[in-house]
Picture 1 (cartoon, helix red, strand yellow):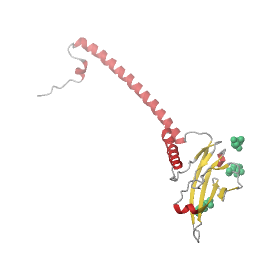
Picture 2 (picture 1 turned 30 degrees about the horizontal axis):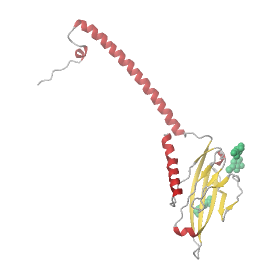
Picture 3 (picture 1 turned 180 degrees about the horizontal axis):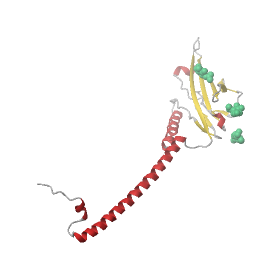
Length: 214
Ligand SMILES: *[C@@H]1O[C@H](CO)[C@@H](O)[C@H](O)[C@H]1NC(C)=O
Ligand SMILES: *[C@@H]1O[C@H](CO)[C@@H](O)[C@H](O)[C@H]1NC(C)=O
Ligand SMILES: *[C@@H]1O[C@H](CO)[C@@H](O)[C@H](O)[C@H]1NC(C)=O
């Protein structure tokens, strides 16, 4: 189970690495689990088509607490704009120069940072008279936990595995004791019967072999 859980970030990391080393843009989704007190990268990648290179990019990051409304927490419009929010001073630009990667990092994550993050990227074309917009939206449902740990289902399955293991061991033990007793009883019986019918082994007495007709 933990091996499987570890495989996904590894795959994402490999993809990200590949994306960073080659000019190919890969839209790797963000991680959605953070640990309290750590920094958390909210990944938002919006790959450009060739014609979009000539566009002006505006990036807006929103946060929606559970049961609340979206509010702006970060903005990129001709440079980084200061935005007043409870996140002020804890957000860092973590994107790329070409604005295909427009990720941000939340420093010192608290439990109350859980919620839905929205990354809205708009590109406005400069070369056309009517200036069309291209918009992309990424949603990141973030869950902040107190400690890095396994989730409930994997803990339950682990406990079940141990219970099963203990049960199987006990069963094996009981079976062995039962077998041992049966064998020693059979041996006793064999010894007794050996004195009566010297020539016939005890097994043959219980399950007489039917002679096969040829
Ligand atoms: C964290 O909780 C406090 C009080 O409950 C609230 O005022 C604040 O806005 C919350 N922070 C965020 C980022 O939602
Ligand atoms: C992180 O936040 C907690 C609670 O607000 C604070 O006590 C702590 O000093 C902060 N740590 C850093 C490194 O900013
Ligand atoms: C982000 O953009 C989409 C598409 O234009 C829009 O529907 C949505 O309301 C925007 N999100 C926020 C939080 O403004």
